[in-house]
Length: 212
Image (cartoon, rainbow, N blue to C red; front, side):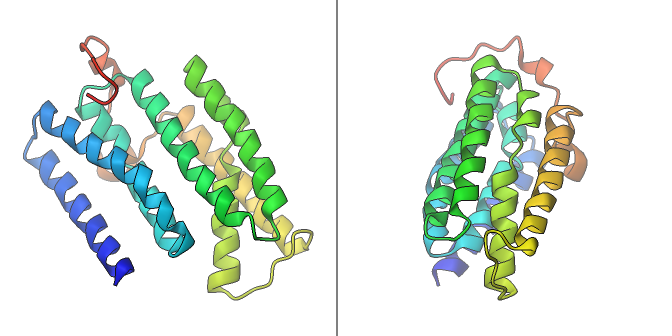
């Protein structure tokens, strides 16, 4: 029941997002929506301990469009970048907690530390290219490991050749993603829905508060 309910919530959020866009919602409405997304990104990681795959899906689902929502609400890129990195790091913490009982925990913890350095440095300096040198290997590796063990039913030891392959694939995928997003500036909203994001449009807006 819990998993079905959360899936319904995701469906409703997606429908609301599409309705908001096509009805040309005002900036005030987009600001309310980014509040909803921010709260959801703070709460949904807690379900990882009972529904790990649903937690992964919800995180990916909410992380994908929040840049466009932030843009439509009038945020400047610097504000969105800091918010997004903090929200990502919060999710990474739950991956670490969940992985504490897994045989791959030393790898997860090491990758978490590396990514955290890049996250906080990038948020502080507003230099997103730093993320290319500290890519999000941990999250992809974690997902590949869960798929292999929980869905495929494989036994994956930390030093096994198969685990090294999972790690290598995670490295390749994460670097390609960091390059696409932070170097080529190809965002989810642009590439999937054809929605336009030009952060320079918001540089002259008057921003007050943390989320408003």
